[in-house]
Structure formats: C-alpha cells, structure tokens
Length: 260
Image 1 (tube, one colour):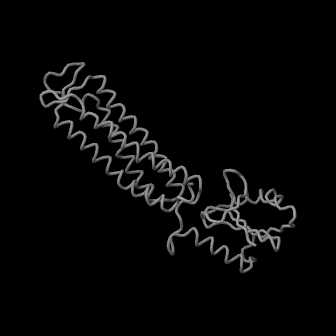
Image 2 (image 1 turned 180 degrees about the vertical axis):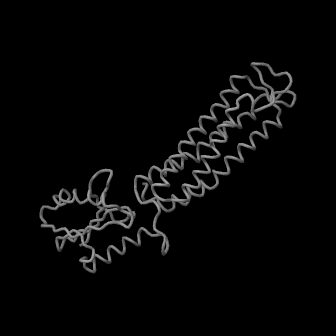
C-alpha cells in the first residue's frame, strides 16, 4: 500500500495528504510493504525546503516502529508504481494540459484569500459611506451638513481607502513571490487608483464649492456637485473592483480546497 505525505513547512512536520498538492511541496511516498520511503521535490520547490524536510524524516519514521524503513531519493531509481504515483501527483497540480497552479505555497494562498476579500469589501464600504450623503437634509436644492459630520464622512472613506492600499501592496508582494503576473497587475492598478483617491479625499473642505449661505459650521453643497463627486468615486473604484472580483472568483474556484 502506498501512502502519500507532504512536508508542512509552517509546522515543520510531515502530514499525510491524498488530495491537496502544490508544486512547492516536498513529497514522501511510503511503500509499507517494501518498507521504503521515496522522497521527491515538486517542480517549484527549493533545496532549502528539501533539506529541512529531509532533516525531519527520521523523526517521521519513528511513527512506524514496526517497519525498518529505508529512504530513497534518486528519482531514476524509483520503481514503476512510484513513477506512476508521481505522475498522478503532477496531474493534480495542473490546470488543463500545460498550466501549473501559479500559487505554490499554502501560506501565500491563505494570505491572498484574506487579502483579496478585504480589497473587495473595503472599497464597497467606503462608497457606502460616501452615499450616506444622499440622506443629508436638502435645503433649496442643496445638501446641508455640519462641519463635524462632513469631516467624519470624508475621513471614514479616506481611512478605508488607506487600508485598501495596504492590502493591495501585500498582494503585489504575494504576486512577486509566486510569480503571478495577473495578481501584480490588478493590485498595481488598485495601488495607483487608491493613492489617487486618497489625494482627492485629502482635499477635505476644498472638494466642493460651498453654496451661498454656508458658514464655518454648516455647509451647503450643490446636489449636482455631490452626484458628480459620487460618480467619480464609483468609476474609480469599479476600475479595480471589476478585475479583482473576477480574480476572486477564479482564485476560489481553483484554490478553495487548499484554503478550507
């Protein structure tokens, strides 16, 4: 009977796994009948991880006290049934005929899954905050708002946009680590637009030409000006939201079994 194990770098231990494999993994295939462990590196794994996994293999063998296990590492010496098992492992990390899964680490998959959800939700929350202005008191075709509420309104969206910028930056790093060009491009678009929105919102009271009758504590904003302001923000947000929503859907379709 053949049993498959992968080396969990975060826990520094070998764990049995039959379904979830990534190209960064180090594999151990145990043939209990022949009392042999075959070690093999995934196509995107590195020597450092292999050495770390190999250093833990003796501790792993102690879990099978009834077996006198030998270790085989040279791939050319693998018997046919092991080669067939490795072929099946390679097929499990492919998308279609030639595309290997881009993300190769459990850690980056899980961080990215959190980060991309955040960059979808946060801009939506920011825009929902902005459209609360439509519920301000209307006075002579102008929206009336106190300076305190106005400043809170602007600052809330600015803070949410700054947090979004941080997550976009994290995604760029993840994209570079995993050599995932789509993640890098979509996140870079988000960074550029988020910086622009922050600079725009940072204008504060200079965002609008307050109408006649405004005071230092009570502002009157033209309904037309406010609608234009909201449409500009919505357009900017949609530029990066649409591609990232697409990426979110495709990412979870591909990697959901590695997240949960």
